[in-house]
Length: 369
Ligand code: SF4
Ligand code: SF4
Image (cartoon, rainbow, N blue to C red; front, side, top):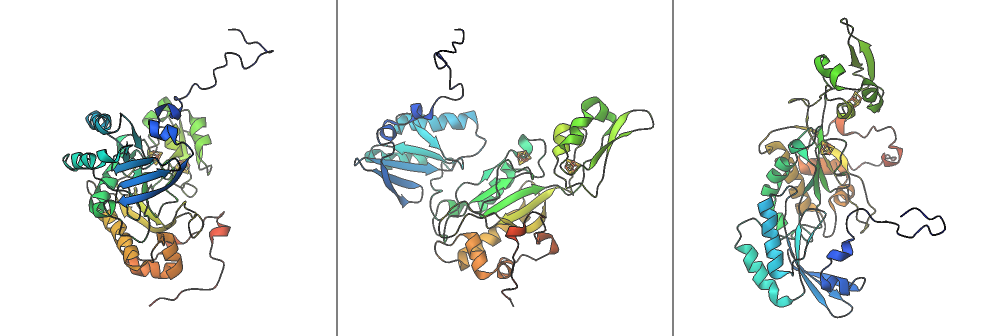
């Protein structure tokens, strides 16, 4: 149909993206939309939502993975077909939620899930460690400084009891981003694992001119550290001012002949104390507490130990409802380092030049032993 300026909305296609989510609501959710009153966690992983209309929606939450096999997804769909009229829901942390409008199906579903080995662990609610969100890692992305799924699997294997329990002082959100571009936005998590590079890109002259648009690589650098040069044989290449390079990998995104992943230079930093919740205190960004740990595939023992030590110190010492960052601020970051057994080095001092507001602007210190 030609565009009619007199009637601009006629035949206009306004939604060419994914289908509207309302189409996929279970009947009970559609019927009670906007009427949910409150919810209770009956036991770890099992919730009930109460509606003003008197309806009750039972939820069984099980751990999922970020990267799932087709066989696994088919099994998930079979369970949803059998118990939930074909409906299920994924949480933002890759948990799977089976939604039931009939209480009599709850126990049979739980019993069924328990017969399927460890593929459907029930948990991930309340004051525990829910699923760890992560980015692509070595399996898919081009700039990772560490793996994602491998590190997360190693950590969650160790913290599995906390996934199935609710014995911590408050929620603990753990996240992983495998480079500083942080497409996983992990900077507001209680504990975050961040991949960092520590060496500038290597320049592969053999391929650079053939593979890369040099102006694009130059423009991609946030610190203007790259300049174009001409080699003796007349070919064009680039040079990096190492003093200015902050190892972000943006140039590699534009130019595959400038790789910067390195077995010794790349590894992991741990940042802690962030949250997005408004409960008790305002949302906060995390702070770097361990500047570097090496990549140790396949089980990353140093990273697993660091995360576990921080979590255990918090579990032992924090007050009920206190998030990890709130605990560290109450006892003082000096004591946080002491209790978690983390050495304090100059690398963890916040010297970001736009961080005036997050600097501690007082002479009050909490002296430790
Ligand atoms: Fe890629 Fe970085 Fe995202 Fe990891 S965090 S998936 S390396 S952009
Ligand atoms: Fe510039 Fe980042 Fe490349 Fe370093 S790694 S040269 S800072 S774009």
